[in-house]
Amino acid sequence: QVHLVESGGGLVQPGGSLRLSCAASGSFRSINAMGWYRHAPGKERELVATITSGGSPNYTDSVKGRFTISRDNAKNTVYLQMNSLKSEDTAVYYCNVDITYWFTPRAYEYWGQGTQVTVSS
Image (cartoon, rainbow, N blue to C red; front, side, top):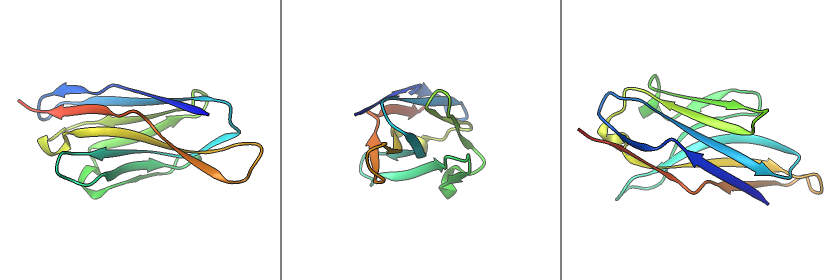
């Protein structure tokens, strides 16, 4: 079993910055892709950014140039640095990790508990 703990959400003014963290703990062979999704009221869940095990990032168009995803493999942690925040970035942000165990080649997907990000003046 894998446990994900998110932190770093909060209230910030437009133009401000926040950094989200998501740490994975448990007994597993490896973490493959890691990512962040968000869910705003009245909208569908949206992929924000992903990063491969090798560190290659991918972003949804609306956050390119403003958000940066990174990971620390030694700490089993993924980060999302969010700069130049806009009101439309307001949402609950969820981390997502893809994990492989020793006993099967199948990969398993896990979700964090979510952290609220509110951008408002």
